[in-house]
Amino acid sequence: MYLNYKVYAGRVLAYPVAMKLSRVILWFFIALLFFPFLYIFNASLLSVDHSIWMIGISIIGSCLVTFLYLGVLIETFAFKVTTHTDHISSHTFFKTRDIYYRDIKGYRLRNHLIIEANNTERITIPSSFEYFMEMRLMMAENFEDLDQKLGNEHDNAFFAQEGELTDNEKEKYITRAKRIKKGLDITVGVLFIISFFHISQYAELMLHLSIFVYFYLSYSDRSLIRIHFRQTQLPNSLYSIWVIMMLSGLLLLYKVIDHQDLARYLIFVIASSCILFVLLFITANLCNQEVPVTQVFGFLFLTFSMMVFYSMNFVSLINTMGEQHILHTNSYTIINKDYSSGGRRSISRYYFDLKSASGGVLENIDVPSRHYSTKQVGDDYQIHTYKGNLGIAWTQTNGY
Image (cartoon, rainbow, N blue to C red):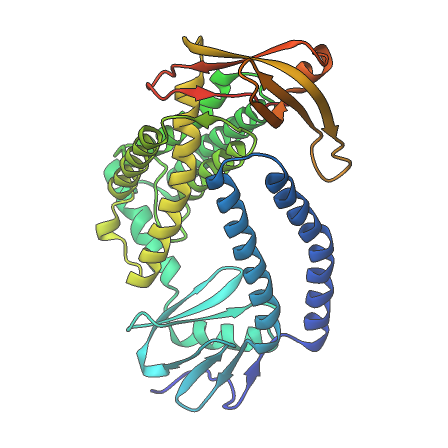
């Protein structure tokens, strides 16, 4: 294939030595700050009687974070891209990819350069690589910018609904769309802060329902906001939906609720996740998205995993909010009280040792700080089991 501009054969694109050193130092300090916190968090879960699924999720997540951290360090030294007379090679610790010039479909330019082939193979080149600008110029001179091509098609398809518009009118539409999305994103942020500090359950409910606002806007033919997988001038609601699901998962960590009918709870969680998945499939119009199959599969797996965490918190919220009917109450006598100081890196926790009328003893029961302050050894302590709005019996003694 004849190229108008070509990077010299044998050129090796990699992180400069100074960049490698700075990245190692940066990740070292991140490890010093993050991994002690991760250890303390997991140790605190194991030290008290938390549910098995919560401990399992925490440990699996910690292992994945650790492997990801090690992978980033390894790739800092192993990752490089080499140009040849007829193809480009990408070398990592785990895999080597080759793309021949004749097979290149085009490129995408973000914070890095993505080279895509007709066979869905792709090579990513970070902007901090040596000779990055040479490679970028070669791609711009010889191949199409796929983001610009597909993004223009997406924008033009929307503007075609409005008839013939001038560039100034199109710019007004784009400005208005960005203003609407910015307002929605700010509202979601405020709702999360209110929910995080347990100010109002209704604010947390609105946070969860905001995801359906993005789905509705993305489905409406007249909406300026869409779910898509390409860079366009019109705003994309996909990332906002991801953020809402991640924030919901974060709120889940601050709730320790014992769902006594676990089977019914999981049925509601799976049903909610499947409904969200179908909504995403419809609103994103996945059948017509021009993205590689491997990318779609990875995207769907990641999204469905986040939907499960979102649904766990959403179902729990719907089941426990508002006035609750008490199914039964268990009375205990406080025989000991203790607390663990959280210090700077963890939350202070308060515990009661409880004795039932039959003589059974419950040790290290996590209780709210207000209960710890008002109750003394020898006092009665009651634990209520509630019916739940969804018919899932639940008990909560934990809180801060």
